[in-house]
Length: 162
Image 1: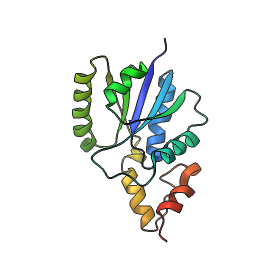
Image 2 (image 1 turned 180 degrees about the vertical axis):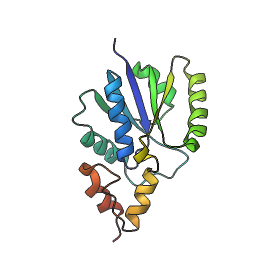
Image 3 (image 1 turned 90 degrees about the vertical axis):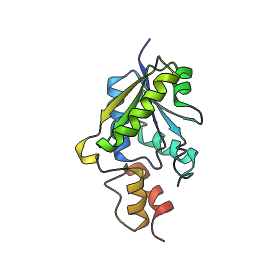
Image 4 (image 1 turned 120 degrees about the vertical axis):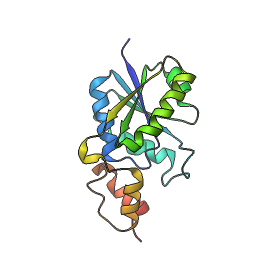
């Protein structure tokens, strides 16, 4: 059986940093499941779950071993249900590590078979987050260098200055 990993996130919206982690994971593992999850520490979001799934599918259509799903429960349960061996999380800065480390330890307690793999973001993406994309877009800035071209117009249409 091949190795399946899960790349979880809220992806509100997908950035080139997210896509980089997904693409790199697809080269290392047999199957990558990108799962759109709700971040209960943030508001509902700028895009619906269905829109986020659509964005990811459009941007990963050339990655044959990548699939997209949604889940509203515990990540540890999802990983178990899918028979995945690990979760891949991107780290941009040391500030990400503290929160991700606590989440990894919690998930390990909830599912002792689950591993967490931290993938360091490429240097050119270290500053980038969905929040940055949304703020720049809402203030009328150019987001073309921050998001995949397949979804850029959709993001501008929703969030751009009116």
